[in-house]
Length: 153
Image (cartoon, rainbow, N blue to C red; front, side):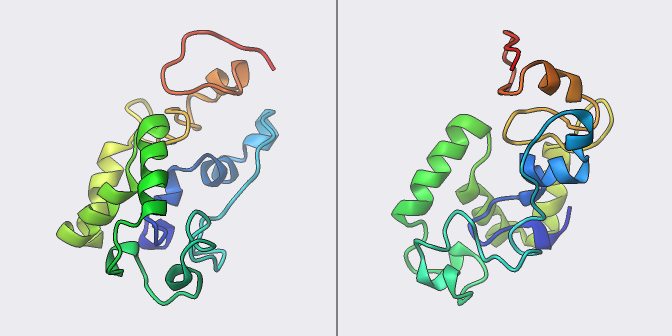
């Protein structure tokens, strides 16, 4: 995990299904998902916020916490959705970067999201490690954080 995978909005792209899908090449394993290299490596300022925020869209700030409107209405809504569905908070991430610094934040993220079986990273979008839990996703393409029911697709 490195700084280039932390988007201005606080999203940790290393935890995203599209980023991890590419890293683990899940298409070869039978799961057809969109791949992504992360916001910054692709030259994007933030997929979630760039259209709604001129400062981010034009790259005038590196992180949302640098803005006088932090946290803005758009970021609060995005953060609520991610806290509710995906067990992560972009606002908490940004505050941790502010308080701890980037290196300590990245260390804490690695510990928080480490797979207990293989030490890979757990995906924030489904709670699975795409290294060692891919079978669960193959059985239920819509799997989310601890679901028991298997839905074939």
